[in-house]
Length: 455
Image (tube, rainbow, N blue to C red; front, side, top):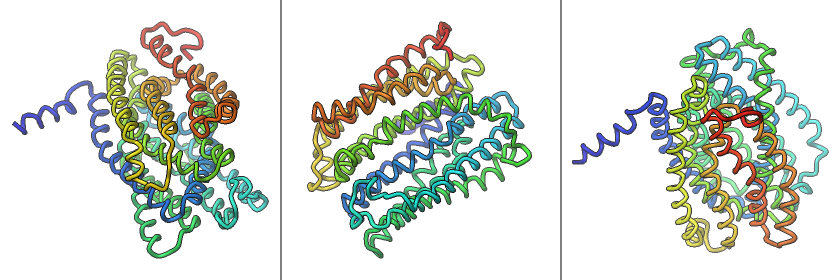
């Protein structure tokens, strides 16, 4: 009986359209990796709070968020490469794919080299303690810490292009493996540090920043010498004329990502400015808790982007419709799971991080609402990104970014909702985009998209 059920389960992953079979296998393998990532992430929180304390942990989260803003100086090149590389491979043009990759490496190396030089010149004159609204006795030498984290982050962002290529080649399992593996290694190092040294932001900064870079460099060396030798970056394949197709799409992604900075990545900074580091810690505990939902759903969603690029290139709309319909049904299941998580949240927080950290239920409820909206809208977003029809998104996210701070002031100060007010502000700002995306998807797949709906 058991063998019968196991055969039926295996057949699910063996049957169907070849593109779907490939996606389903990636999803199956990704569950293990994401499971490990979730477990490591959950262990990370109490471990780092215990090692650094609430204030230093909140400070570290804010530093990570701000340094993460630097990634958007790639002006969308990573996403531009992902779509153009996938299209070149689909059309069996390896030389063009290699040229796109080599040119992207060259452009990113130039951009981040300039950024590193500028940062090294201005860093001695920046008062980081004032920026982070924290006392020197708590923060230590922030100037040195920022140099370390910024340098490794820039290097990592250049070498992480191997992950972009894996995504473009519809191998999201391998591409997604870098994050949990680097987190696991960092976790082991931090456990050792906790036994050998007192809480230090410098040690944490070196550990968490350095490990991903070493992993990306090692992976790049391996893949470009073996499986992707045909596409390996080379100086002779650099063609700056290809910057235009990379940037035409990339600039739009860049503006959308800038809105992401304002709407999400800046949340820690806004909280630390309006409130205090302890509130950053509380927000991130809730965010990490509900990110279990987004990470699990992301496992299923990730293969859609590049698979859609391929399907759209050959006008396979039947496959696209089938996949989107399935994703919406899966989103309902995840939304039900999120409801149970919300109901149990207060008890789980006590077990997870202890009774000393008090988390308001309203904070959990607002993040739950944000996650639920994400579940139902993200399949359409992935589709539009995959086919490059993002001009409407481009305009709407500009409106979002401009309206976010006024809404934050309205909900946090006027209505006195505190940190939950920031989440409510982001939800309200996103509504026009979340409503337009399914409409645009339907117009495109039904051949009725014209004007801005088809750009």
